[in-house]
Length: 128
Length: 109
Image (cartoon, rainbow over all chains, first blue to last red; front, side, top):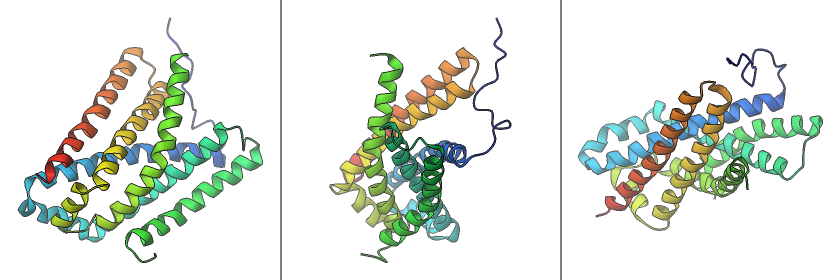
C-alpha cells in the first residue's frame, strides 16, 4: 500500500520558532561541516604532491576568498558546537520550557558569532 | 538494547567527544590554513597534532554518518533508496578518514 503521509518536518506548514530555526541551521551546518572536512582531507592529500604543486592552493587560501571560506567554516563549526551543547543539556532533561528553548536558541545564534570572532582572534594569535 | 537506542547513545557519546576536538581543530585550522607547505606539513606530522587530527577525523565522520542517516530517514520515503543512501554514507565515512590518516602518517616519511 502506498504511504501518502507527508514527510516530517513540514517546513512550509510550520509556524517559525527560534527552536525550529536552530534545529534546521544545525542540520545545514552539520552538512556544511562534513563537506568542509572532506575538502580539508583533500587539501591534506594534495600535500603528498609536494611543495612545488602547493603554490596554487596556497595562493587561493591567502586570497580574500580563502579567508572568507576560513571564517565561514569557523562560524559553521561554532554554531554546531554550541547547538550540540544545547542538545546535550536538553538530553539531561533541562530547558524544555518554551521560554527557555527560545532563550537558549537565541544564545546559540548570538554566541556562534562571538565564538567565531574569539576563535579567529585566538587562532591568529591576536589574543593570548 | 534496541538498535535505535544504541544509535542514539553512540550519537550522544560521539557528540560529547567531538565538541572539544572541533574546538581544538578549528583554532588550529585558523592558525595554519594560509601558512606555507613546510609549516603545514610540520604541524600535521608532529605530535600531538597528528594524533588529535586523526581522532577528530574519525569522530567527525562517525558523528556525521549517524546524524546524516537520521536526515535520510526523515526525508527519503523509498526504503531501497534510503538503504542505499545510508550504506553509501557509511562506506564514505569509513574510507575518507582512513585514507586521510594514512596520508598524514606518510607525509613526514
